[in-house]
Picture 1 (cartoon, helix red, strand yellow):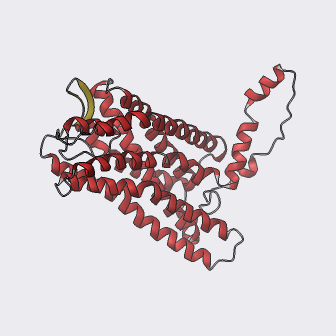
Picture 2 (tube, rainbow, N blue to C red):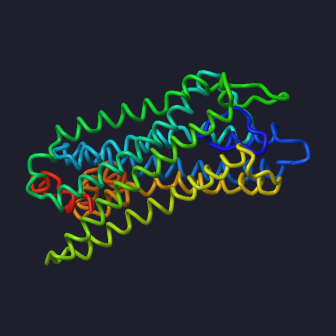
Picture 3 (cartoon, helix red, strand yellow):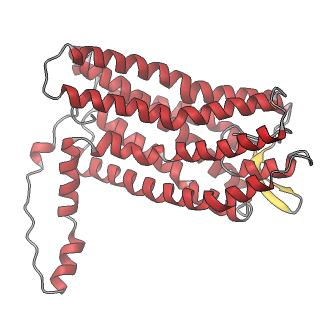
Length: 358
């Protein structure tokens, strides 16, 4: 993802381990010891928190979708795939959390696999957010056409395409990433066969274009057309839908734009445009903060796209009401709990982008 003034051969998408590379590979006059201490002090706790929140929220999404929604529409398929993407993303975090405290002790195979999972989850998650924007656009702006287009089958086909693109974009991690010993310290980074600057340029452009530029263009178009349609539509749910749309856009740009900006500035550092040592340290600090910010976006996805919907709140209540563990525990204490049962048949309806997902 980043590196300091003398760039080591590492990927544009990575985690805190780049800062260990920065520390060892930076020119001697430019000390990165403070950056390394900062990473070791704060990153493990933040990675662990993101892992726990992301694992809990996205696991609940998967369980509720399979138990109640039964994947009957395009929205359901995209929600499931977004949750799986976020789970892939967060499953790599315990490894980086341990690495921030020690060194890479898991060997080259796991170095490749974990880095690859991280990147696949990153790309696929953003792509599915983009597809959900298109899904809402079809449901609200092209309502007649969406009756035929927004089916579970078409959702599965487009999801397959997204996974293929994400896997292809992440393939360099499996090829170039290695566990590499440096000064009695083992790190996990990319070892490029050719000119590092060229690879750095290509990698940064890839993540800026695929991870921000294209999704931003698609989302801005879709949501601007949705708002335009809702403004001319007399609907009591209009204001809520518009607020939800703004929330989706603001959260996406707030969590991911700073990260992409820092990546671009670090590219300028690689190209020699930025040479100051303090600037290099500041970029390292900024990278750590913006990457953590982006990590927590996967924790908010279940809240934004799933639990804020009225029907999904009912599904969640039903899930916990049917959970037997609390009832069994209370029975052992002599207490008796009577749950109010709800018929699930009324909830088994096909998703609509403007009702279920918003």
